[in-house]
Image (cartoon, rainbow, N blue to C red):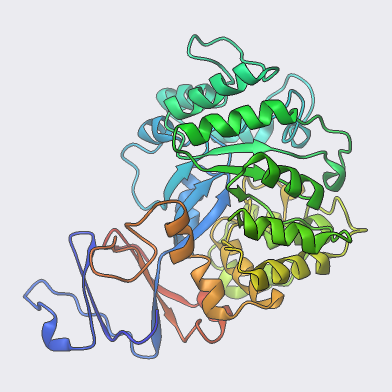
Length: 415
């Protein structure tokens, strides 16, 4: 991100990074882009989403070139069907469907009754028959024989993980959520024995395991059971927070703080951000309405606690990744929007104490390294030509990351 003057893109890759213009291979087809007064960044990651083809297109408008789905149908099998032939999208990798108890999170977010939620009906209406079939199959909890698989034993947890990997899950997710901060106290959680069986099986097959948590006690359980990463930060600050931070560091666990989500749960930190013309100009009315809303399920909890926890983790040297937990345009799931909220998360990370460069690293090189996506994340010869040109210098003022001028995805100019 710093100090480079000339970058050459060819055939979907970065082919030259140099301070010497004489090393650039100019020819009659060369397109020269003058980046004076601008900064070239690697394409950004959102390390926690729930997404679709339309959302991947929205993400790319903001320079987000890779989304990591933390529950959904865009495993390899889902990608092969749902994204086939589509262009102008961010890349996506997926956990498939998470391990959770019957009636556990995220069931509380879906309207009760037999009807399919309106936002899912709208998504399915825009799909082809093959896409709808793949979407439905991806969201069914079935074993290899198509039978409903209840996670009521360690053996079924192993089978469930096997099923997710069989359809092409890139990593595995488990839910440890009692619902207290989501206005749904008492949500069932899988037993430690079942969770550990699923985590161990994922590790046996070489997959990272991420745990959904929102509280410190759940984070402690996830770390003790062997999770590699926390898919959220913890919002509360118990007296033993220092002990938890030390444990996370000792076990080499990474954290995706999702401060934008914590701010939505505890209030509405996105209200001002949603007025930024650089955001408004790229979002539909439906998404703007969602971004301006919030979960607001735990207004009694101070958002400052989440910021302080991030600072403690950062000071301890725990790897932090940019992620948002954005999903669908529903005001009840508000404060979030694909692509846009990555830039808000960058700002909140600097509010927590990270430098602008550290925050940008959390959205580029670090997630690429942790998730084994070594073909991206850096402006380096041989990497994918996923880069964005922004006006100004976001390495000094991270709010300038929104000044996106041009986006290249796989070397193709998108915007």
